[in-house]
Image (tube, rainbow, N blue to C red; front, side):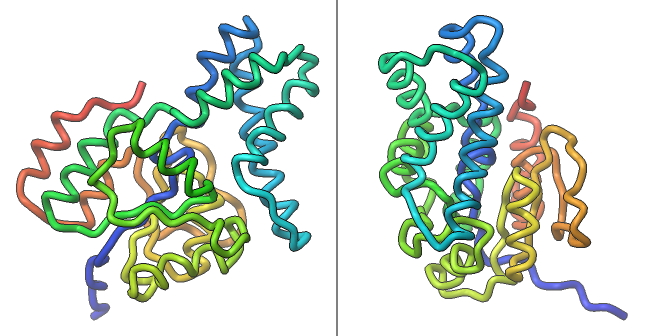
Length: 242
């Protein structure tokens, strides 16, 4: 009989796309560029991630904030949008204060109540993450905010994922890594983490021969890994994302 693996001892979250809605900038983008806001937000995000991969493969590094600005400029040019310095600054400031998904605060609060060590492992720069977590009201709910800036390698590079076990002093298998980015969940699985892919959009699994350990549809699925009282009440009281 196969033995049930022990539950994780800590949880690390991806930040952008998992705790913070990277497409919430689309509302401001739509005000600035009517009819093109959604396209701008999507291409901006895609190019931002493209740049992290390009630089990591080349052994070069630029801070995530710098790549975020570069991705915005590329997306605007690609869509033939006249991005003024003022509009650029507005959008970049909005990226500092991205909206959190609606269930996230309650889930993090419940993890703290249950005594679970929780943190972030993100491509974001330390300053970006500090502003975003404070803006979202997550102060005091995350014991660790880990940035890849320390190794200057972006996910899915193994050096980025290694920061989690090094910081928490735990084997990767004892850490639940949570991401809404399918490629990120796969990268963490390769590194040996127990993984949860929060597939909010119902997107297909990456076709790379690897699956995350678990899949859910909202951050509430994290609570299933850490038994504790009042789980049902948390599930009921937190609205689904819209």
